[in-house]
Image 1: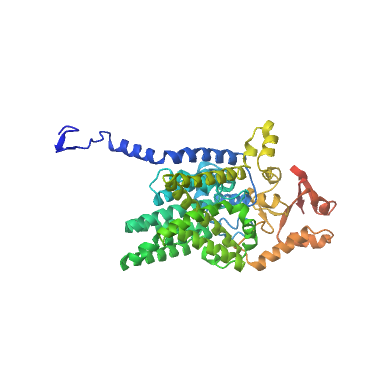
Image 2: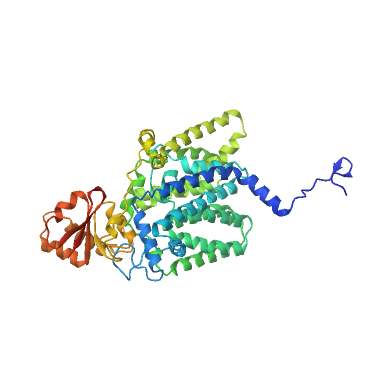
Length: 522
């Protein structure tokens, strides 16, 4: 029958698409996702330009040290920060092992590997945001709106913290395990939503290793991943047969077994640990300035709850905020990281509702104006890395117009060139103590809390390090502290130089940027 021929009274056959199936699939994919790509690709290019200028800060050196130790030995890396050859670390995760192996095959340094990981993790994260939003809305405009909100709808103050998905943090910390774990959690939620609609054992078998990798890579992200899965499975759990409930229990048991079987470190031993709480207090400071615009999502959550008391984003936001509140009340400040999952739920819900409101009455579109204004402020608040990308002639103007970024940390090649891999270094000043482990050296006391170190051992190492850098200490007492941990080098900042001037057995070897000095011991 010819195309368009009559097949009945008043009826015509629907014309067929004569294009090959592959062409139709590509066209359908492009039609669905091109708005998201228009936003995602420029942001990926921006992050790549930022990581190229090497904005090292805080725990960047620690993560580079983890990659460095694994590139040196995948089977016996030792502790990444301390001279403990038989020690291990919760930072040896499936992500860091795979990244180190890939970096070694490609001939990348530890820093180069983290740069490549930044782009890969960011692509995985943005695709996770888009896929999660599509689960909640069929509109092709909802994913790019959600992406815009997750990057910029935070607060009027820029906030830098690893594992947070605001644009400022991602520009500097996208290569870290926390970003990978967050991205994996998003894709895990999408898989849970698909399984809830069509329970297939094969999909469940894929979800189990993804969940285990997420938990091992970042324990708090694993908690968020579990909450998100429960949120998307809450309603199906009430209706599904017992056989499917047993499948979920078996999957959870298998995931736990895989986590426990991880050969480098049993991350379940971190449950109840408070070593990192004092570091995370800062995430509770200035809640309005950092997270304030996320409150706009509460309006969307309220509307979704009126329609469905078991709405997944609403359940996730409520559970995450409950843990945030418990963390503040109990002093378990590490739970401040659950702000991340609360913000994602609020931002995605707002994006989905905003696309729906846009098709409604004209007065409902005023919500879009409010969100656009909040995003504009967020773009400015998160824009300080642009100062580093400005041409030298325009940098002074950029610093006046944009939020001022922190000072970039210098390389330590000038000091590392005198040392040998594994040498123990005494240092207390930033960035010296944060970056030197990335060059293959060990510290007396970790610059960042090490959950693998017992509190007693951590206190003893800290006391020894303080002895080395305390003014007026007797030379024999200082040398005894240095000898205890076989210290071969001292890295001192400008203000610490008088402590070692004229001290027998401590000789200046090299001068570095900012007045830093490298001393050789013995």
